[in-house]
Length: 514
Image (tube, rainbow, N blue to C red; front, side):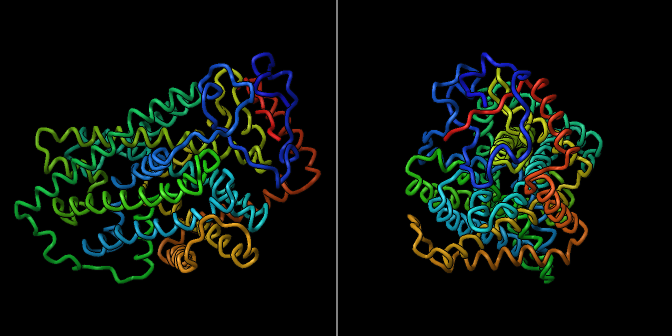
Protein backbone atom coordinates (compact mmCIF):
# COMPACT_ATOMS: atom_id res chain seq x y z
CA UNK A 1 0.00 0.00 0.00
CA UNK A 2 1.36 3.42 -0.90
CA UNK A 3 2.53 5.73 1.81
CA UNK A 4 1.68 9.38 2.06
CA UNK A 5 5.22 10.17 1.04
CA UNK A 6 4.87 8.09 -2.14
CA UNK A 7 1.79 9.91 -3.34
CA UNK A 8 3.59 12.54 -5.31
CA UNK A 9 5.51 9.92 -7.31
CA UNK A 10 2.75 7.34 -7.76
CA UNK A 11 -0.19 7.26 -10.11
CA UNK A 12 -3.60 5.69 -9.66
CA UNK A 13 -2.92 3.33 -12.51
CA UNK A 14 0.03 1.88 -10.58
CA UNK A 15 -2.06 1.06 -7.53
CA UNK A 16 -3.87 -2.24 -7.38
CA UNK A 17 -7.55 -1.92 -6.53
CA UNK A 18 -8.58 -2.92 -3.03
CA UNK A 19 -11.18 -5.59 -2.37
CA UNK A 20 -13.99 -4.78 0.03
CA UNK A 21 -13.51 -5.71 3.64
CA UNK A 22 -10.58 -7.98 2.94
CA UNK A 23 -8.23 -5.00 3.10
CA UNK A 24 -8.41 -4.82 6.90
CA UNK A 25 -9.72 -6.87 9.80
CA UNK A 26 -12.77 -6.01 11.88
CA UNK A 27 -10.62 -5.48 14.94
CA UNK A 28 -8.06 -3.30 13.23
CA UNK A 29 -7.14 -0.02 14.92
CA UNK A 30 -9.20 2.92 13.81
CA UNK A 31 -7.14 5.85 12.61
CA UNK A 32 -9.27 8.47 10.94
CA UNK A 33 -8.45 10.77 8.13
CA UNK A 34 -8.31 14.26 9.37
CA UNK A 35 -4.93 14.86 10.87
CA UNK A 36 -3.66 18.36 10.66
CA UNK A 37 -1.09 20.45 8.96
CA UNK A 38 0.18 20.40 5.44
CA UNK A 39 -1.00 16.93 4.59
CA UNK A 40 -4.54 18.19 4.67
CA UNK A 41 -4.04 21.50 3.05
CA UNK A 42 -2.61 20.33 -0.24
CA UNK A 43 1.08 20.92 0.56
CA UNK A 44 3.80 18.40 1.04
CA UNK A 45 2.91 15.69 3.53
CA UNK A 46 5.01 15.32 6.68
CA UNK A 47 7.49 12.48 6.90
CA UNK A 48 5.29 10.55 9.31
CA UNK A 49 2.34 10.61 6.92
CA UNK A 50 -1.17 11.59 7.83
CA UNK A 51 -1.60 10.82 11.50
CA UNK A 52 -3.89 11.81 14.31
CA UNK A 53 -2.18 14.53 16.33
CA UNK A 54 -3.22 15.75 19.78
CA UNK A 55 -3.61 19.39 18.83
CA UNK A 56 -7.10 20.17 20.19
CA UNK A 57 -7.19 21.98 23.51
CA UNK A 58 -10.13 22.62 25.83
CA UNK A 59 -11.46 25.65 23.96
CA UNK A 60 -11.06 23.81 20.66
CA UNK A 61 -13.29 21.08 22.10
CA UNK A 62 -15.84 23.65 23.24
CA UNK A 63 -15.76 25.23 19.78
CA UNK A 64 -16.37 21.88 18.07
CA UNK A 65 -19.40 21.06 20.23
CA UNK A 66 -20.99 24.52 20.15
CA UNK A 67 -20.20 25.07 16.48
CA UNK A 68 -21.81 21.80 15.40
CA UNK A 69 -24.85 21.98 17.70
CA UNK A 70 -25.86 25.51 16.71
CA UNK A 71 -26.78 25.06 13.08
CA UNK A 72 -30.15 25.07 11.34
CA UNK A 73 -32.12 23.31 14.09
CA UNK A 74 -32.86 26.38 16.22
CA UNK A 75 -34.24 28.13 13.13
CA UNK A 76 -36.38 25.15 12.04
CA UNK A 77 -37.39 23.02 15.02
CA UNK A 78 -39.36 25.62 17.05
CA UNK A 79 -42.25 25.10 14.64
CA UNK A 80 -42.14 21.30 15.00
CA UNK A 81 -41.82 21.39 18.79
CA UNK A 82 -44.84 23.70 19.05
CA UNK A 83 -46.88 21.67 16.55
CA UNK A 84 -46.53 18.41 18.48
CA UNK A 85 -46.55 19.84 22.01
CA UNK A 86 -49.61 22.02 21.38
CA UNK A 87 -48.80 24.89 23.75
CA UNK A 88 -46.15 27.51 24.45
CA UNK A 89 -45.55 26.29 28.01
CA UNK A 90 -44.96 22.66 27.06
CA UNK A 91 -42.80 23.70 24.11
CA UNK A 92 -40.50 25.65 26.44
CA UNK A 93 -40.41 22.67 28.80
CA UNK A 94 -39.41 20.45 25.86
CA UNK A 95 -36.55 22.81 24.97
CA UNK A 96 -35.25 22.94 28.55
CA UNK A 97 -35.53 19.19 29.10
CA UNK A 98 -33.93 18.48 25.71
CA UNK A 99 -30.89 20.44 26.84
CA UNK A 100 -30.70 18.58 30.16
CA UNK A 101 -31.11 15.20 28.43
CA UNK A 102 -28.37 16.08 25.97
CA UNK A 103 -26.11 16.96 28.88
CA UNK A 104 -26.80 13.62 30.59
CA UNK A 105 -26.10 11.78 27.33
CA UNK A 106 -22.91 13.76 26.78
CA UNK A 107 -21.66 12.82 30.27
CA UNK A 108 -22.30 9.15 29.48
CA UNK A 109 -20.28 9.60 26.29
CA UNK A 110 -17.50 11.19 28.34
CA UNK A 111 -17.15 7.86 30.17
CA UNK A 112 -17.25 5.94 26.89
CA UNK A 113 -14.76 8.28 25.22
CA UNK A 114 -12.19 7.99 28.01
CA UNK A 115 -12.73 4.24 28.53
CA UNK A 116 -12.45 3.54 24.77
CA UNK A 117 -10.21 6.37 23.52
CA UNK A 118 -10.62 5.58 19.83
CA UNK A 119 -11.83 7.77 16.99
CA UNK A 120 -15.19 6.89 15.49
CA UNK A 121 -17.50 7.65 18.41
CA UNK A 122 -20.55 5.38 18.43
CA UNK A 123 -18.96 3.11 15.85
CA UNK A 124 -16.02 2.34 18.18
CA UNK A 125 -18.19 1.84 21.28
CA UNK A 126 -20.72 -0.43 19.58
CA UNK A 127 -17.92 -2.46 18.00
CA UNK A 128 -16.16 -2.87 21.35
CA UNK A 129 -19.26 -4.05 23.19
CA UNK A 130 -21.35 -5.91 20.62
CA UNK A 131 -19.06 -6.77 17.71
CA UNK A 132 -18.78 -5.92 14.02
CA UNK A 133 -22.40 -6.39 12.83
CA UNK A 134 -24.03 -3.73 15.05
CA UNK A 135 -21.08 -1.43 14.36
CA UNK A 136 -21.55 -1.91 10.63
CA UNK A 137 -25.28 -1.20 10.93
CA UNK A 138 -24.42 2.14 12.54
CA UNK A 139 -22.14 3.01 9.62
CA UNK A 140 -24.75 1.75 7.16
CA UNK A 141 -27.51 3.95 8.61
CA UNK A 142 -25.13 6.90 8.96
CA UNK A 143 -24.29 6.51 5.27
CA UNK A 144 -27.85 6.05 4.03
CA UNK A 145 -29.90 8.20 6.43
CA UNK A 146 -28.27 10.14 9.27
CA UNK A 147 -25.46 12.09 7.60
CA UNK A 148 -26.98 12.85 4.17
CA UNK A 149 -30.41 13.62 5.63
CA UNK A 150 -28.94 15.89 8.29
CA UNK A 151 -27.07 17.81 5.60
CA UNK A 152 -30.22 17.93 3.47
CA UNK A 153 -32.18 19.55 6.32
CA UNK A 154 -29.50 22.24 6.61
CA UNK A 155 -29.46 22.80 2.82
CA UNK A 156 -33.26 23.12 2.71
CA UNK A 157 -33.14 25.59 5.59
CA UNK A 158 -30.51 27.59 3.69
CA UNK A 159 -32.73 27.65 0.61
CA UNK A 160 -35.87 28.56 2.59
CA UNK A 161 -34.19 31.50 4.25
CA UNK A 162 -32.49 32.80 1.12
CA UNK A 163 -35.81 32.76 -0.77
CA UNK A 164 -38.13 33.95 2.00
CA UNK A 165 -37.56 37.71 1.39
CA UNK A 166 -38.47 37.23 -2.30
CA UNK A 167 -41.79 35.59 -1.38
CA UNK A 168 -42.73 37.66 1.66
CA UNK A 169 -46.40 37.65 0.66
CA UNK A 170 -46.56 33.84 0.62
CA UNK A 171 -46.60 31.39 3.51
CA UNK A 172 -43.50 29.75 2.06
CA UNK A 173 -41.42 29.88 -1.14
CA UNK A 174 -42.28 27.47 -4.00
CA UNK A 175 -40.98 23.94 -3.59
CA UNK A 176 -38.98 23.60 -6.82
CA UNK A 177 -36.75 26.68 -6.31
CA UNK A 178 -36.07 25.53 -2.73
CA UNK A 179 -34.86 22.14 -3.91
CA UNK A 180 -32.78 23.61 -6.75
CA UNK A 181 -30.97 26.08 -4.51
CA UNK A 182 -30.41 23.35 -1.90
CA UNK A 183 -28.90 21.10 -4.59
CA UNK A 184 -26.65 23.90 -5.85
CA UNK A 185 -25.24 24.72 -2.41
CA UNK A 186 -24.66 21.00 -1.67
CA UNK A 187 -22.72 20.58 -4.92
CA UNK A 188 -20.75 23.78 -4.40
CA UNK A 189 -19.62 22.92 -0.87
CA UNK A 190 -18.83 19.35 -1.92
CA UNK A 191 -16.56 20.83 -4.60
CA UNK A 192 -14.92 23.14 -2.04
CA UNK A 193 -14.22 20.21 0.29
CA UNK A 194 -12.89 18.11 -2.58
CA UNK A 195 -10.61 20.86 -3.81
CA UNK A 196 -8.81 22.01 -0.68
CA UNK A 197 -9.20 21.31 3.02
CA UNK A 198 -7.87 24.76 3.93
CA UNK A 199 -10.62 26.37 1.86
CA UNK A 200 -13.21 24.29 3.70
CA UNK A 201 -11.86 25.22 7.13
CA UNK A 202 -11.69 28.91 6.19
CA UNK A 203 -15.33 28.79 5.12
CA UNK A 204 -16.15 27.26 8.48
CA UNK A 205 -14.23 29.92 10.40
CA UNK A 206 -15.78 32.84 8.53
CA UNK A 207 -19.40 31.71 8.97
CA UNK A 208 -19.26 30.41 12.56
CA UNK A 209 -19.62 33.76 14.34
CA UNK A 210 -22.72 34.73 12.33
CA UNK A 211 -24.92 32.07 13.96
CA UNK A 212 -24.10 33.32 17.46
CA UNK A 213 -24.67 36.91 16.40
CA UNK A 214 -28.06 36.07 14.87
CA UNK A 215 -29.24 34.41 18.09
CA UNK A 216 -28.02 37.34 20.19
CA UNK A 217 -30.09 39.69 18.01
CA UNK A 218 -33.17 37.49 18.46
CA UNK A 219 -32.72 37.25 22.23
CA UNK A 220 -32.13 41.00 22.59
CA UNK A 221 -35.20 41.90 20.53
CA UNK A 222 -37.33 39.41 22.47
CA UNK A 223 -36.20 40.75 25.84
CA UNK A 224 -37.00 44.31 24.69
CA UNK A 225 -40.45 43.19 23.49
CA UNK A 226 -41.26 41.58 26.86
CA UNK A 227 -39.81 44.50 28.83
CA UNK A 228 -42.22 46.89 27.10
CA UNK A 229 -45.19 44.94 28.46
CA UNK A 230 -46.00 42.64 25.51
CA UNK A 231 -46.78 39.47 27.46
CA UNK A 232 -50.07 38.46 25.82
CA UNK A 233 -48.62 35.26 24.35
CA UNK A 234 -47.71 34.05 27.85
CA UNK A 235 -51.02 34.67 29.61
CA UNK A 236 -52.24 31.08 29.05
CA UNK A 237 -49.01 29.19 28.37
CA UNK A 238 -50.44 25.65 28.67
CA UNK A 239 -53.65 26.18 26.75
CA UNK A 240 -54.07 23.60 23.94
CA UNK A 241 -51.47 21.15 25.29
CA UNK A 242 -51.40 17.91 23.29
CA UNK A 243 -51.81 15.05 25.78
CA UNK A 244 -51.00 12.28 23.28
CA UNK A 245 -47.87 10.47 24.48
CA UNK A 246 -46.59 9.61 20.99
CA UNK A 247 -46.99 13.24 19.87
CA UNK A 248 -45.10 14.33 22.98
CA UNK A 249 -42.22 12.02 22.02
CA UNK A 250 -42.22 13.46 18.50
CA UNK A 251 -41.99 16.98 20.00
CA UNK A 252 -38.83 15.81 21.76
CA UNK A 253 -37.55 14.49 18.43
CA UNK A 254 -37.77 18.02 17.05
CA UNK A 255 -36.11 19.55 20.12
CA UNK A 256 -33.33 17.00 20.40
CA UNK A 257 -32.57 17.45 16.68
CA UNK A 258 -31.48 21.01 17.50
CA UNK A 259 -29.02 19.65 20.08
CA UNK A 260 -27.62 17.04 17.70
CA UNK A 261 -23.83 17.14 17.66
CA UNK A 262 -23.11 16.97 21.40
CA UNK A 263 -21.34 13.63 20.79
CA UNK A 264 -19.18 14.79 17.87
CA UNK A 265 -16.15 15.57 20.05
CA UNK A 266 -15.99 11.81 20.71
CA UNK A 267 -15.28 11.28 17.01
CA UNK A 268 -11.95 13.09 17.39
CA UNK A 269 -11.03 12.06 20.95
CA UNK A 270 -7.61 10.80 19.79
CA UNK A 271 -6.79 14.36 18.73
CA UNK A 272 -7.83 15.94 22.04
CA UNK A 273 -5.09 16.94 24.43
CA UNK A 274 -5.50 15.31 27.85
CA UNK A 275 -8.92 13.84 26.95
CA UNK A 276 -9.48 12.55 30.47
CA UNK A 277 -9.73 16.16 31.64
CA UNK A 278 -10.71 18.14 28.56
CA UNK A 279 -13.51 15.92 27.23
CA UNK A 280 -15.78 16.25 30.30
CA UNK A 281 -14.80 19.91 30.78
CA UNK A 282 -15.70 20.77 27.20
CA UNK A 283 -19.06 19.03 27.66
CA UNK A 284 -19.81 20.85 30.92
CA UNK A 285 -19.05 24.22 29.35
CA UNK A 286 -20.78 23.68 26.00
CA UNK A 287 -24.09 22.03 26.86
CA UNK A 288 -25.26 24.53 29.52
CA UNK A 289 -24.24 27.40 27.22
CA UNK A 290 -26.21 26.06 24.26
CA UNK A 291 -29.21 25.16 26.44
CA UNK A 292 -29.42 28.71 27.83
CA UNK A 293 -29.08 30.27 24.37
CA UNK A 294 -31.74 27.97 22.90
CA UNK A 295 -34.19 28.51 25.75
CA UNK A 296 -33.86 32.31 25.57
CA UNK A 297 -34.19 32.25 21.78
CA UNK A 298 -37.46 30.32 22.00
CA UNK A 299 -38.65 32.60 24.78
CA UNK A 300 -38.11 35.48 22.35
CA UNK A 301 -39.87 33.69 19.48
CA UNK A 302 -42.97 33.00 21.57
CA UNK A 303 -43.03 36.54 22.97
CA UNK A 304 -43.24 38.09 19.51
CA UNK A 305 -45.07 35.51 17.33
CA UNK A 306 -48.41 33.88 18.07
CA UNK A 307 -48.80 30.12 17.83
CA UNK A 308 -50.65 30.38 14.52
CA UNK A 309 -47.93 32.63 13.07
CA UNK A 310 -45.17 30.22 14.08
CA UNK A 311 -47.01 27.19 12.70
CA UNK A 312 -47.62 28.99 9.39
CA UNK A 313 -43.98 29.94 8.91
CA UNK A 314 -41.21 27.75 7.48
CA UNK A 315 -38.68 30.45 8.40
CA UNK A 316 -39.44 31.40 12.00
CA UNK A 317 -36.44 33.71 12.40
CA UNK A 318 -37.40 35.67 9.25
CA UNK A 319 -40.96 36.11 10.50
CA UNK A 320 -39.51 37.28 13.81
CA UNK A 321 -37.21 39.75 12.04
CA UNK A 322 -40.05 41.15 9.92
CA UNK A 323 -42.00 41.88 13.10
CA UNK A 324 -39.20 43.31 15.26
CA UNK A 325 -36.34 44.67 13.15
CA UNK A 326 -38.13 47.02 10.74
CA UNK A 327 -35.88 48.23 7.92
CA UNK A 328 -33.14 45.94 9.24
CA UNK A 329 -35.30 42.83 8.86
CA UNK A 330 -33.11 41.73 5.95
CA UNK A 331 -30.27 41.04 8.39
CA UNK A 332 -32.07 38.05 9.89
CA UNK A 333 -32.29 35.91 6.73
CA UNK A 334 -28.74 37.03 5.90
CA UNK A 335 -27.33 35.81 9.22
CA UNK A 336 -29.33 32.59 9.12
CA UNK A 337 -28.14 31.93 5.57
CA UNK A 338 -24.55 32.43 6.77
CA UNK A 339 -25.17 30.12 9.71
CA UNK A 340 -26.67 27.31 7.66
CA UNK A 341 -24.02 27.69 4.95
CA UNK A 342 -21.26 27.23 7.53
CA UNK A 343 -23.10 24.37 9.23
CA UNK A 344 -23.59 22.54 5.94
CA UNK A 345 -19.90 22.94 5.16
CA UNK A 346 -18.99 21.50 8.56
CA UNK A 347 -21.48 18.65 8.15
CA UNK A 348 -20.03 17.68 4.79
CA UNK A 349 -16.48 17.85 6.15
CA UNK A 350 -17.16 15.74 9.26
CA UNK A 351 -19.50 13.22 7.65
CA UNK A 352 -17.06 12.34 4.90
CA UNK A 353 -14.37 11.60 7.50
CA UNK A 354 -16.64 9.18 9.35
CA UNK A 355 -17.13 7.20 6.14
CA UNK A 356 -13.39 7.35 5.51
CA UNK A 357 -12.82 5.75 8.93
CA UNK A 358 -15.41 3.04 8.22
CA UNK A 359 -13.78 2.24 4.91
CA UNK A 360 -10.34 2.02 6.53
CA UNK A 361 -11.82 -0.46 9.01
CA UNK A 362 -13.09 -2.58 6.11
CA UNK A 363 -16.78 -1.98 6.88
CA UNK A 364 -17.43 0.17 3.83
CA UNK A 365 -16.20 -0.13 0.22
CA UNK A 366 -12.50 0.68 0.03
CA UNK A 367 -13.08 3.29 -2.66
CA UNK A 368 -14.34 5.53 0.18
CA UNK A 369 -10.88 5.26 1.80
CA UNK A 370 -9.07 6.74 -1.21
CA UNK A 371 -7.55 10.21 -1.03
CA UNK A 372 -6.78 12.52 -3.90
CA UNK A 373 -3.01 12.49 -4.46
CA UNK A 374 -2.89 16.19 -5.32
CA UNK A 375 -5.17 17.83 -2.74
CA UNK A 376 -5.10 15.16 0.00
CA UNK A 377 -8.89 15.11 0.34
CA UNK A 378 -11.16 12.02 0.47
CA UNK A 379 -12.79 12.83 -2.85
CA UNK A 380 -14.72 9.54 -3.36
CA UNK A 381 -16.21 9.76 0.12
CA UNK A 382 -17.17 13.40 -0.43
CA UNK A 383 -18.71 12.72 -3.84
CA UNK A 384 -20.75 9.78 -2.57
CA UNK A 385 -21.96 11.81 0.39
CA UNK A 386 -22.88 14.66 -1.96
CA UNK A 387 -24.84 12.30 -4.19
CA UNK A 388 -26.75 10.84 -1.23
CA UNK A 389 -27.49 14.31 0.13
CA UNK A 390 -28.90 15.53 -3.18
CA UNK A 391 -30.90 12.30 -3.47
CA UNK A 392 -32.58 13.08 -0.14
CA UNK A 393 -34.07 16.19 -1.76
CA UNK A 394 -36.82 13.91 -3.07
CA UNK A 395 -38.58 15.19 0.04
CA UNK A 396 -38.52 18.87 1.01
CA UNK A 397 -40.63 18.29 4.13
CA UNK A 398 -38.13 19.20 6.81
CA UNK A 399 -40.25 17.76 9.65
CA UNK A 400 -40.37 14.34 7.95
CA UNK A 401 -36.62 14.41 7.34
CA UNK A 402 -35.98 15.30 10.99
CA UNK A 403 -38.10 12.31 12.03
CA UNK A 404 -35.96 10.04 9.81
CA UNK A 405 -32.76 11.35 11.43
CA UNK A 406 -34.00 11.45 15.00
CA UNK A 407 -35.31 7.89 15.02
CA UNK A 408 -32.11 6.48 13.55
CA UNK A 409 -29.85 8.52 15.82
CA UNK A 410 -31.92 7.67 18.89
CA UNK A 411 -31.73 3.96 18.04
CA UNK A 412 -27.93 3.96 17.86
CA UNK A 413 -27.41 6.31 20.79
CA UNK A 414 -29.59 3.80 22.68
CA UNK A 415 -27.19 1.07 21.51
CA UNK A 416 -24.15 3.05 22.65
CA UNK A 417 -25.65 3.62 26.10
CA UNK A 418 -26.47 -0.09 26.22
CA UNK A 419 -22.78 -0.68 25.43
CA UNK A 420 -21.82 1.41 28.46
CA UNK A 421 -24.16 -0.57 30.72
CA UNK A 422 -23.05 -3.91 29.26
CA UNK A 423 -19.37 -3.10 29.73
CA UNK A 424 -20.09 -2.00 33.32
CA UNK A 425 -21.52 -5.50 33.89
CA UNK A 426 -19.11 -7.51 31.75
CA UNK A 427 -15.86 -5.71 32.64
CA UNK A 428 -16.44 -4.01 36.01
CA UNK A 429 -12.69 -3.67 36.68
CA UNK A 430 -11.87 -2.08 33.35
CA UNK A 431 -10.04 1.26 33.81
CA UNK A 432 -12.53 4.14 33.63
CA UNK A 433 -10.86 7.54 34.04
CA UNK A 434 -14.37 9.02 34.21
CA UNK A 435 -17.13 7.04 35.88
CA UNK A 436 -20.56 8.68 35.87
CA UNK A 437 -23.27 7.84 38.38
CA UNK A 438 -25.02 4.66 37.16
CA UNK A 439 -28.37 6.44 37.30
CA UNK A 440 -27.38 8.66 34.36
CA UNK A 441 -26.93 5.89 31.75
CA UNK A 442 -30.00 4.04 33.07
CA UNK A 443 -32.12 7.21 32.84
CA UNK A 444 -30.80 8.04 29.39
CA UNK A 445 -31.33 4.47 28.20
CA UNK A 446 -34.99 4.55 29.29
CA UNK A 447 -35.55 7.93 27.61
CA UNK A 448 -33.93 6.80 24.36
CA UNK A 449 -36.07 3.65 24.45
CA UNK A 450 -39.13 5.86 24.88
CA UNK A 451 -38.06 8.03 21.94
CA UNK A 452 -37.45 4.99 19.74
CA UNK A 453 -40.66 3.04 20.46
CA UNK A 454 -43.51 5.51 20.97
CA UNK A 455 -43.23 7.69 17.81
CA UNK A 456 -43.73 4.56 15.68
CA UNK A 457 -47.41 4.91 16.59
CA UNK A 458 -47.46 8.58 15.61
CA UNK A 459 -45.35 8.45 12.41
CA UNK A 460 -45.44 4.82 11.20
CA UNK A 461 -44.58 5.46 7.54
CA UNK A 462 -41.45 7.58 8.00
CA UNK A 463 -40.13 5.49 10.87
CA UNK A 464 -41.02 2.28 9.02
CA UNK A 465 -38.76 3.40 6.18
CA UNK A 466 -35.93 4.00 8.68
CA UNK A 467 -36.43 0.53 10.21
CA UNK A 468 -36.44 -1.01 6.73
CA UNK A 469 -33.13 0.69 5.87
CA UNK A 470 -31.55 -0.64 9.09
CA UNK A 471 -32.86 -4.15 8.31
CA UNK A 472 -31.46 -4.10 4.78
CA UNK A 473 -28.01 -3.54 6.29
CA UNK A 474 -27.99 -7.07 7.77
CA UNK A 475 -27.88 -8.99 4.45
CA UNK A 476 -25.54 -6.35 3.04
CA UNK A 477 -23.12 -7.09 5.90
CA UNK A 478 -23.21 -10.86 5.48
CA UNK A 479 -22.87 -10.75 1.70
CA UNK A 480 -20.37 -7.92 1.31
CA UNK A 481 -18.42 -7.77 4.60
CA UNK A 482 -18.60 -10.96 6.67
CA UNK A 483 -18.05 -13.61 4.00
CA UNK A 484 -14.43 -14.57 3.45
CA UNK A 485 -15.07 -15.27 -0.23
CA UNK A 486 -17.30 -12.78 -1.95
CA UNK A 487 -19.43 -13.63 -4.98
CA UNK A 488 -17.15 -13.40 -8.05
CA UNK A 489 -19.50 -10.98 -9.78
CA UNK A 490 -19.34 -8.67 -6.73
CA UNK A 491 -15.55 -8.86 -6.53
CA UNK A 492 -15.16 -8.12 -10.25
CA UNK A 493 -17.63 -5.25 -10.03
CA UNK A 494 -15.89 -3.68 -7.01
CA UNK A 495 -12.47 -4.12 -8.66
CA UNK A 496 -13.68 -2.27 -11.75
CA UNK A 497 -15.36 0.46 -9.69
CA UNK A 498 -12.28 0.92 -7.52
CA UNK A 499 -9.91 1.05 -10.50
CA UNK A 500 -12.14 3.54 -12.33
CA UNK A 501 -12.54 5.68 -9.20
CA UNK A 502 -8.76 5.72 -8.64
CA UNK A 503 -8.23 6.99 -12.17
CA UNK A 504 -11.05 9.56 -12.21
CA UNK A 505 -10.37 10.90 -8.71
CA UNK A 506 -6.59 10.46 -8.87
CA UNK A 507 -7.02 8.48 -5.67
CA UNK A 508 -4.63 6.38 -3.61
CA UNK A 509 -5.14 4.57 -0.31
CA UNK A 510 -3.69 6.25 2.75
CA UNK A 511 -0.70 4.55 4.27
CA UNK A 512 -1.33 2.03 7.04
CA UNK A 513 -0.22 2.92 10.53
CA UNK A 514 0.99 0.05 12.67
